Length: 530
Image 1: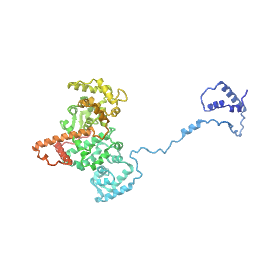
Image 2: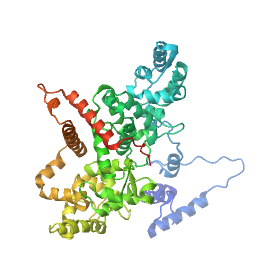
Image 3: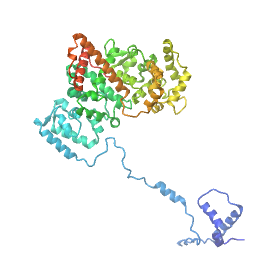
């Protein structure tokens, strides 16, 4: 019996199965549907009229009850072939976010007016300070601006040359970090190397009121500049690349600290980067170790620091090139003054992020980014030997390891990473345990609740380095004062009816320090940068 077309259309079950067939689905039809479908196909073939040339096709039949199934294929093709949006807003601005509201011509007009007040409209390095303020820049940008405009060659900068340079700078660089990099960097360079900071810092030494006493000791200008440069790279150059980018400048406080030099006459109040007291402490520590005074120290010299508190194995790792960048360290076994600055800050402030990275590189002997149990045991063995020589029974390594794992709480058991040490906020205790015996014993004798309280304290407390530098500076100044009193044989000039003001005391101590450095160190060549 043949099935009529009308009955097929009214059969909802068969219509649904045919709809699935139209979508290309792979399924098995029941036997009754197979028979009905075969009969329907035969009927369609018999009833299909022959197409004559020029005869148009009949219009498709319209289903009365429900609309025909939609084919998803054309819809999918439309989605795939749809063009991507070209209106994605820009989100990356390596030269700073442009300020559409700023009027560059108005700024350039003010600069031109300022040059009119200068004789011949030619500014020297000192008059460039006025131009820097008109440009809206801090005072100590004047040396970079002077050099960028070509003033180093002729000794002055004409108005036209400076305005042309500043116009180009405003058009291509839109924030302070980008402008600062452009002014200091070499031509066609987008980052700063160590020697790029020398003109800026030499201007600070020559003109800052807090460093006037250094004019009588020019042999120490290069020492101070080297110290400041190393402190800048220690804090700002988080990538350890030896080149500071505008992104690193933006993330640091360097430009804000540089602006403070204009407001603060006592440079020792600016403990970040520029403090003369900090320079004095670092240089005196280095001078004590440099027995032959050639501005290099050997591995044996460094081991004498702080009464041989650091282990020999960690010092060997320092001289292996794990944290030092010069070839001199690896070939000749000598450390320069610049590398010593990094060592001293890292040794005295193990909470600092750079310090944590510094010592992690030293302890990661195989360089796989993980401190394994073998590496921890390697450094702890020497600690045990030293404690036994002192008559102290050391803690077994297994028990110590349990304590350190509880302290650090690594994300993966038995594998301590740099991320784990930064997160736990106890890296200073961890490091001292494995290579600084004196500080390790101090931690063992300290109240554990006090240690936990220090770790949870987020207040604006001075760093470990600031505390160390302040204590050492007071000790050194007291020693120099005592020596000066003994040489004079009288204490009369130190007995005053009224106490001196802090600024007078600071100037007096600076003079004592400067004179003592001159007596001890004499005239030395400049420190070579590695």
